[in-house]
Every structure is written in C-alpha cells, then in structure tokens.
Image (tube, rainbow, N blue to C red; front, side):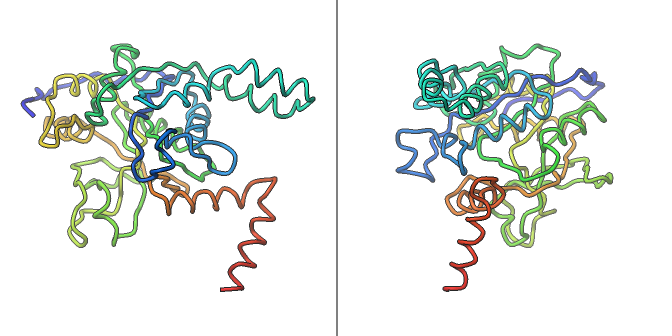
Length: 305
C-alpha cells in the first residue's frame, strides 16, 4: 500500500461525537432483481426501510448530522429523509394526522448531507469522499447500511461510550458461530473486561479452526481524524480498493491503539436474503400492530410442518 506511519504520541479526540457517515453506495447484488431500481437500504423491514432503523439508532446515540455517501440509483434515500409537501398535504386532507406525525418525524430526525462516491472503490474510499464534511479534529461515527440490532441500548451508543473512555478508534463486534468465521473479518485481541477488547490484528475470512476468535466486525465504527489521514495517504490494495480494515492494519503496525466492543443485543444482519427475512420476522413479532397475529401465524405454520 506504500504507506508507513511514524510511531509516536497522537492526541486523543475527546469531544462529543455529533456526526455519522453512512456509506450506502453499494449495488445490493444479493437482492437482485429487487434492488435493480431501488437501493437495498430502502428495502422495508416491517414498515420502515433498513436505513431508517440505522439513522434512528445513530440519533439515539446523540448524533445530530448524518452524511450519506451515495452512488447512482440511491436517490430514494434522499427522498425518504426529505420533506414531502404533497404527501403531508394529502394526509392532512384525509385527516390521517397520526401518519402525518410519522412522516414528519423522519425528516426531523437529523440534519442530512449527501455526497457521491462516483466509483465503488471500497469502504475506505467512501469515507474519503465524505472527509471534507468532517473537521480535521473531529471524531465521527460510521455505520454501514445492513447492520440492524435488537438491543435495549443503541449499539452506536455502546461504541461511542468506549471511545469516550479511551479516545481511540472503536470497532463494533459481534460473536458469530465458529463454523461461520470464514464469512467474516474477525479480530485477535486482548480482553479488557466489560466486553471491551484491545485489538491486536484483523484476520479476514479465516479458515474454520484457524480463527483467533469468533468476534466479527459488524459495520459500526468510531473513527478519529488519524484514520481519515491514513486513508487519504493510502493507495488501492491488491483488490483495487481502499479498505478501512487496511487502514486499521497500518495503524496497528505503527503501534496505534484500536479497541473493539462486543455489542450487547442481537445482531440482525440484513446483508443476505435469509438473514433479512429473519430480521423481518424478529422485529415483526415485536411490532405493536401485527406482533401478536404474526406470532400466532408462526405457531400455526409450525404445527402444520
């Protein structure tokens, strides 16, 4: 990658995190043909698109500004979080005031900004595209568009709390089945207690039985300005992409600290069709409107098998 970091003290960035970057420029090929003309992030889980759950999670963690890194065909995300005069007017005329409140709550969740990633050159490249919207001394939350969590405490909040304790980058982690570690990037790290780990290295999709752990990165991060600086100095790797994991590896090799937080709650990965359906059922059973009926339907269906 042609980059060497000089080891030495780096200031901690302890100000409150108010911005989040959402890289959402991917094609969503696993969901074709459903994603041919709509973003995968806009696929609904019960009655909300996946991306809305993530934005609400970020807002619950104290985020005030959301930066979407988009690509071609992602306009629906912008429209979803924008003000819709015609829709609000129609709902008012039909006296559907409860729906008016729901719709208007979406556009008031946060301040939204959008920047293009013209060519999909990796998750690190996506962050570089948004870097000009973040101050040089500002840490930022990063959330990828298929990471739902069913938890009492916002997973974004959990990651931010670890950052507030140490002042260094944080990687959100989840335990995966040891037989499936070859599908994920996992960490080798020192257990510091309270589900916090000092990360020593990343291992991308290790062979089953050779993984240093079953703790996988789930797509929730807190990054510091040093991470952006590292990404800006990097060249594309063998894959032709600039990857966030490679930036972390460079920082680790230079002696920079990096922490992981095993997130409390259930990871509802919506990155493939089976897990997407599982997430829909899981959250559907908790839905106030349809939850009881859905549970009864599942019981009746199971009895008939």
